[in-house]
Length: 335
Ligand code: 13P
Image (cartoon, rainbow, N blue to C red; front, side, top):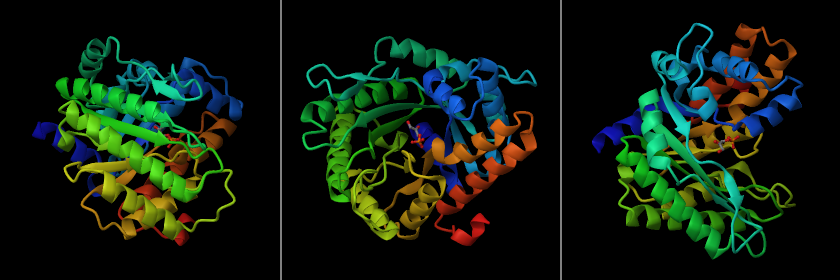
């Protein structure tokens, strides 16, 4: 099992983070629609290949989460995509859940599916070169939610998933995402995130998951995006650290935050402050989707043949986040 611990540590070593490029075809189509690029398999691959072959990959990106379509695609230079990622010095991973569906018994909430046939799919992904995996549970904060049912059932699914993934010698990323949507306070987010994470670890332990061989991918503790509360960056860092210190067992080697709808700069600044104040034993890095890709996608959409220019935009964001993952970022470096 120490092999899994080594993979987890390697993905997050020296301020490296994870590029979450695992948008489902539906989500990627929305992203491409928003910049007026047709969502074809070729265009989805073209954009992603530009990122995967950027120079910041070897210094900043320890792992890439792929989607089923991408892990089976072949690059313009006829490389298999997982090979392209390994050769540049990063680690290929794969999203294995099949999405969040309506939770029977609490239809306003979601349960993530994908356990049926998972063992067989994992074996296939392992053969394709994946070394780690991702599964995301989602929780909404409102007056009555997340319910005990959603907290319990998503934790159970995350634990069954993790156990199967470790059986196949890969590192599971455990992603319980408490959404930013809503008018809740940062205190509500703190309490619900703590409850959700604690329940996940109860279930992971029950399912005999080796905690040294996982990566936790949580949300930061933020006020809801429709809340009037003005919470400082310092307070976000303080509450996030307090939440994780109190709910994550010390064996866990690394934490990689999702960006969850924060702007690129916000996600970098918050990560930096978390690291400047990190009094835990955990490596605290990033596993960003939108906060790593937004500007690059916008730039690329203006001329999809401008590979170098797009990579420059992506390299900058990757470098800023890798500095933030070491508490070495400052605003003047953005210019
Ligand atoms: P965002 O950073 O855009 O939230 O995406 C991360 C992710 O992988 C969500 O599952």
